[in-house]
Image 1: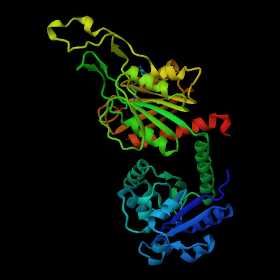
Image 2: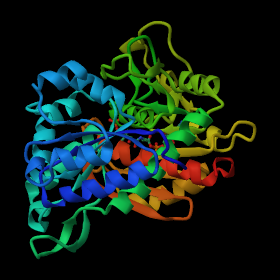
Image 3: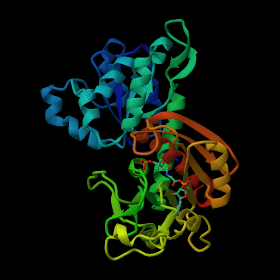
Image 4: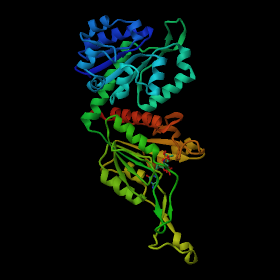
Length: 409
Ligand code: PMT
């Protein structure tokens, strides 16, 4: 993968590692990357605009209210111009500003106004990095969709050893090659995904139904995460209270049968994720009128099995998606039961949800999951925002799809 003509905006932050920005710029220029730079006020304490401009052969932007540069190019067009924005070094203080959504200078304003991918390259003392405040900011920023490389373990400028050292220009260069490679693959292959989410409702009569507490949040966040990675995504959702903008293609359904019909209509896709809590059973008959208490007899609620959508997708010989992902919600023996499920349902990955507590899982903004593959490999993700978990799952799915598919290489 060549980086030729990629447009990268580099924001140079205020830390001793700022000098490495010059090495990165040199490396990228050698590979014909088009670079624009913003030097923050504290970055200026470590490198000069002149040294950056000498390497980039273009103006180094500095101030928000610099009449010349604002006339030439404003903060919105700077961010629109870029294919990717990198902040290096990203200091603890800068992470705090971003997590608060500050727009107090040109750099923070560009980042807040940006709809592009942003790569943060942290560099700081090990204690600062491991401080709860920084780790909390890390979580918030990952949740907002910022990408991170590093920090690495090693000896730092302050003489201490540990996690906090900035990734080297070479490591960043390799990261960028992989990043653009994956972007290209997703775009060229025109990848498509379908995601089921939310509960289903199985009506006994016009006003009563069987359902569950699923809010649809986890599936919705997954759809957004995949869309951010460039995948054309359709969300098939049962009844939920989620409010969503026009940012996603959404199809609303009520029952498991309708969900299955919509899934069938959406094939073929490259990725299928079944995050919905589909009702396993439905009443054999739905009464046309409200069932009266005095008329009740058990026959009114005889149940039959609903179709299994995940099983249908996994075993679909004609149009099996490249990666099929199931979810499992368990209150006990979470891993054991989920491994059994992955075998029964023949999917490629299963996301095991611990739904034993109210503070995460069903109808919460938080989740706690283990991602399990067919070979029993397990990646545990501790309790975190559903959006954060969705970003991790989406990247794993994409990696799996792109590595597995020989056409991609
Ligand atoms: O919606 P939220 O409030 O955000 O909560 C998210 C969640 C906890 C509901 C979600 O993360 C989750 O775990 N969803 C699956 C819950 C579930 O129904 O698990 P299950 O063990 O019953 O089903 C296993 C898998 O088969 C699931 O992928 C399910 O979508 C699928 N299935 C089940 C039955 C059926 N008839 N068709 C299916 O496709």
